[in-house]
Each structure stands twice: as C-alpha cells, then as structure tokens.
Image (cartoon, rainbow, N blue to C red; front, side, top):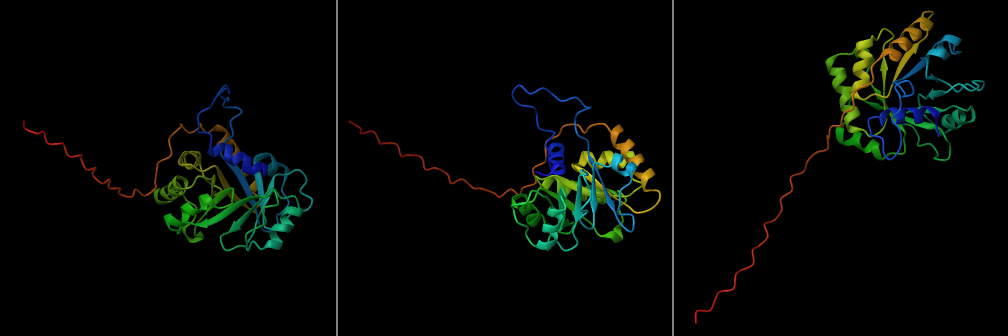
Length: 246
C-alpha cells in the first residue's frame, strides 16, 4: 500500500481509543498533520531542504529517478495511460479529478480524489463507498487560500461527511493558529505550492510550525446523516375475554 496513504489513515483514525493490550503512543511517535509540497514551474527537482521539510512531494508529471522519495503525481486529466506511467515511475500516489478514468485496482498507487467544494452533500457521501483512499478538497482559485470562517466551515463539512482522510491546500504564509484550526477541524494533510526562490525558507517555517502544534483533543465525529422520520404503528392490544356472569 501507499506509504503516504498509510500515514494519512493513521492520522485520520488517531482519535480512536486503543484496544486490547496496545500501549498508548507517545506524542513524539504520533504522526502529525502531513505537509505536502506541490512543485510547479521550472523548479521540478526538489532541494535538500524541501525533502527534509516535507512529508511528501507532488509533481505534475512522473519522476523516473525520484529514488526513495515519497511522491505523488497530480494528474490534470487522469487518463489510464497517465496512471500507468505514474505506477511505472514508482510514484506513491496520484491525485485524480472526478472526471478522470477509473484506474485499475491492480496497482499499488494511493488514489486521492479531487472533489469540488460545490458538490452536494448527498453526492459527497457516496465517495465513502468509492475505491479511493483519500479526498482533496478542491476550491476555486479566485477565492484564494486565506482561512476565513466560511472556508473553515467548508473544511468541517467535508471532514464530517467523509470517512476517508481529507487534504486541503494552504497558502505559503499560513500561520500557526490557522494550521491548528485546520488540523482540529479534521484535515489529515495540507498541500502548499512552491515555485520560487523563497520556497526552502517557506517550507522550513511550516515544518517548524507543524512540529510545535499541540495534538487535537479527541472528539467524536458529528453525525450528519439525514434522519428520516420513522413512525412505528401502534400495536393492537389484545381484547380481554369477557367474564361470564354466572
């Protein structure tokens, strides 16, 4: 299985209580919200500082000589050929748009489905039954990536309706309080896009912020399933036998 997906699932399920004789993990060994670096433009080769700061990388095309780097491919179209090329290039996961072809279940690639924020709740819930491993919240670029109350509610909505790990995009200047809220709201990973000379510094800063964040308190996932009124028919009481008057 995908190494990155395994970490996302561990973070997503971290609120579940330990069972049996398993010991509680220390905070040092518990996985934190994952930092994914999206490399764009001419700077497609990751630097040493980027590799040390990121938990995973995502690129627009497969990288044949990526070595042991945990990386994924963000596919614009997601054709069967594109997915096969990613698998041959030893990519760990792929990000797929909802209008892409359904890849073969034979490959070991992690599959992250990119779902638009405007999707209806009833349709979003169906993603829980699809053969995908995680979901990326896709938002309109015109709104920017600033963390507003409305955007926080949107992240909360996706997190509450899904039983799969959730990823969201963040800006390069996202601060400690914003990352804390995103993690507490239910996201298992954040994706930051870098393509400039300051990217190394940006990623190092984000890494320090994430490492210093307190772990979210355990909370039960709110039930958002629609409740359908159910009327139980009244049971007919058996008629008492009339006593014969002697």
